[in-house]
Image 1 (cartoon, helix red, strand yellow):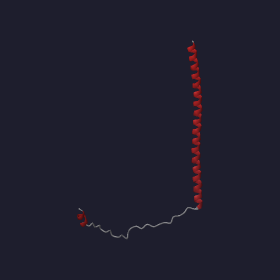
Image 2 (cartoon, rainbow, N blue to C red):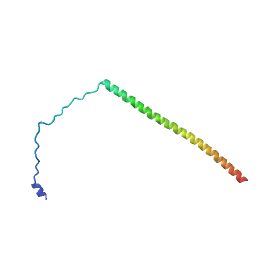
Image 3 (cartoon, rainbow, N blue to C red):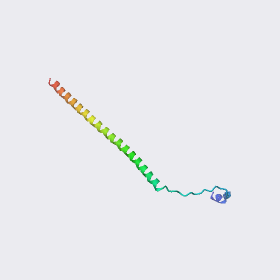
Length: 97
């Protein structure tokens, strides 16, 4: 099998060299002026500050809501405690009769 493959020679057609191919030209990279970079940085920091302020405000409001829910839950448990004490007292009274 190997000897048969050694006897075969693969040829590829040569591609002609074309002189009419389009040529790309390079352009020099232009740097932004210092004032433009400064203005872009100020704009970026302003937008980042606005974003972070919004995120922190939302988080603060979430914690306030959680605090109010905890206070309400605490009041409900106190009411349930009072109800349980009353039920216990009434059961003792009924058992004594």
